[in-house]
Image (cartoon, rainbow, N blue to C red):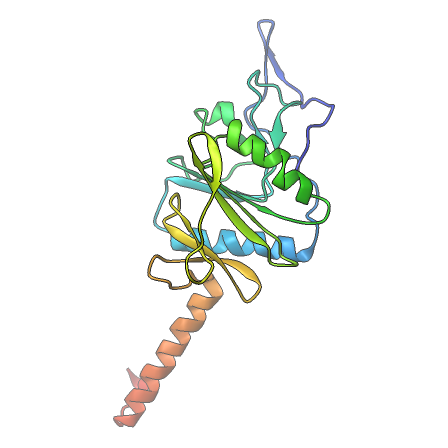
Length: 226
């Protein structure tokens, strides 16, 4: 959600040469609403649980991406609401600094629209993600009116992703569908199953355990003795 500011994060000077620090803090403003915050958390929780055994990706929300070609921290940075970088180390970061990450940009970006950001998200940011980041997939979602769209980079330009019968959009980068259900943007497997949250997994496991216990009782076995 960020725009460039007119101040510098202190740089390091070595033998007269100025180098920007590699461990830069994020510089993102507060989110527009609680709906935006909860949506970002939902996406992060679901993807990180789904890929819990993978260590070759980085997913973050409302985090600054520094990408100045001159490695200057005061120019050329953006803060997507949600993004995923593939083929990188899975570890905590204060920000995503392109020149410290082998020049990698996000493989997928999702922006959450609001009255104050909709013009930028559909205009300037889309152009930057297409022509500078060259991010393969870009999606936007409005948590208030549920507007949802996605684009794939083809021939250097974003083309709309065609929805399937349920209105879901396929992400080649994630190998998952994105779709709206119960007023939330969620991930779905290629088979059409909802990618669950940790709470939903715990609930499913409890229901499975309760069904097993009931079956054992029908057979005259006390499940508490097993």
